[in-house]
Amino acid sequence: MTLMQMKYAIAVADTKSMNEAARSLFITQPSLSASIKELENEIGVELFKRTNRGIAVTPEGEEFLGYARQVVEQYRLIESKYIEKENVRKKFSVSMQHYSFAVQAFVEMVRQFGMDKYEFAVHETKTYEVIEDVKNFKSEIGILYLNDFNSKVLTKLFTEFGLEFHRLLDCGIYAYMWKGNPLASRESVTMDDLQPYPCLAFEQGNNNSFYFAEEVLSTYEYKQLIRANDRATMLNLMKGLNGYTLCSGIICEELNGGDYCAVPLESDEVMTIGYLCRKGVAISPLGQKYLDEIRKYKNEDARYR
Image (tube, rainbow, N blue to C red):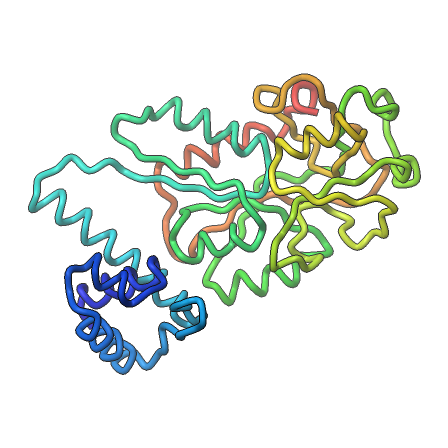
């Protein structure tokens, strides 16, 4: 197995076409196909399958490509630093469920380190994609929550993927809504109080199991339920339809604006928000600073709830 073969496999995965990959690599398609076949025979894994829509990566191929991308990227950094003598910027990437405080922590971390010497990426995305991003080295850290309902299933998945979950914050459950909602002035609400209003939940795509829901009480039978893909749409639905979502109650007005509030839900449910990382891989200084920024929200009741 060679570095060039790994580059070939990555190109095929990215283009989903042997012909397009060959053109981008400036080699013939038969030569590329032969090299991929040789690689598959050597590692004993089928990386790709041909479909009517082109080339599809197999589950085993996804795992291999995650490692291959890291190897190729590390080689590029070594080559740039020691051969081409370039000043390579350090990189930090984080994936997260839709938490405004996690985005704000990222903002504060970037402000402190600056962008002259660093390259940053933040991915606010679906639960399974958070897990996959860390597994495949797309992100160093993943931010998500566990509770009594989902912890057994997700912890098993973390173990299978070579990941570790570390606790950051324990939170009660809040109903997050527009301040114009008739319930917004309440000291607390019950699920019965919320029944007349639509519950808003983040869409989870193909991995729509209750265990991957970003909101607690995912098995509750809501009379009205609307799924959305992003936070901006969610906020608009809160205003337009008096909708609400269930959350940790840690809210950043800097990002969401001051038109919303979090009302405590009368429930014994607890969310444990934490971070995912690769097992046995040390967190970088950038990652440690980011986690420190999140930990600051532990006792911010007055400002963020």
